[in-house]
Length: 175
Length: 396
Image (tube, rainbow over all chains, first blue to last red; front, top):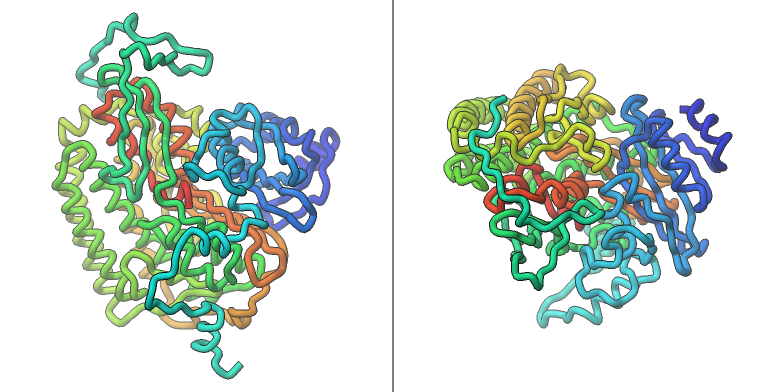
């Protein structure tokens, strides 16, 4: 794996190479290099399988982290390619031309995080949340408690326990 | 492999021309087309999912998958809960096969926290995962037969599945959701007499599987409707991200149990089940043989399980358990293919992000939408079930 990363590093800027375990590595790259890096990994270095594409909202740094997890079937190795996008007007190039299922991931990220993948098929069409026009709900600043209080109503006669307090009473009463 | 007995060639000049994206140009105002909703209820599909089909006559011209009926926002919920509070949530992501969620979540968390679980717990986890595979296949086989008009198979296989659920109940206390694989180990040891009762259950299932093979796989109607139908080409495997029996039926021995050995699979003797041609019939046969392999693996596990020893590693106070920051991906082979959890921790008591990779996410949207074109409406249900789709894991 080190050889592949050294080889790729000569062409693309890779930062923070991290070995999580023997068969799982994570690297960071810049937004403008991402699609060509992934194409290179797929076509030249055998990372043919797109395992998943997801986002992490790093609100404290004002960025979204996109993770493209690729898998090399011959070497039995996974490589997570991470890229950071500005949270304001988050936009990323689409990779639906490389893998068909990427369009579904991108459609979900558009809906749940508000990241735009222009050119991706049906990216603006509702995927899971039909008729949703509020803030994309998987962003960290989406207040789930406020949403449920506004949307749902308490049933009369029903009491609720705070789960953390309740578990503490049951499991660690002396603490 | 015999080819289709009947072929009927439509007069293609009456059909719309294909556009640049490979799909037909559809003008609904021409009154040549009809749109119907297929679903959201389907036999053999555990959960709800709709197909918006555009038909010309009885042939599918275009298809769009609609999900969202079961969205419960689990990934978001978990960001607001401590790790131990996530544990009863994860099993609910995939209803008929909850144990793979529990295992992937627990193993990802243990990897980040640097916890080694006891030997006995590893064997028990392996046993539960194989039992889960067995009951999930039994449910699927009823759905596959039912979607093609063979109701009796579902009645037999659901009886067998209930027997496996009985074993689950005595081992874990739950029939559907087990909440057994807990971070740090498992919740309980094998009850007295479990091995004997499990062996009896396996023998009953084996005897039913012989009947199912005769009645379903040797049935002329089933063959006519499934051979050469819904073919997955070998070069689609990477293009669409296909895993599990759908991929193995093309001849590629892609099996996480063998490729990325986890738990006690390196100590078990097995070879991934493959076929040479991925049509509905062969995919069904691969799953049937995988079910029998699962029975064999359960026997191997029960012969080797230590039956004594610790079942839980020492963990910190679960209410204040801060998992060191980092990210990882944990995977397992479920009945549909590669199941995985991508877990990100920021060093706090709450997971920063949990992303579930369910195989249906790729199979039931991108793949199904493309392979269903030009099929007959009567075959849509059978084709859908032959991809072994669980909608809950698409929308989570």
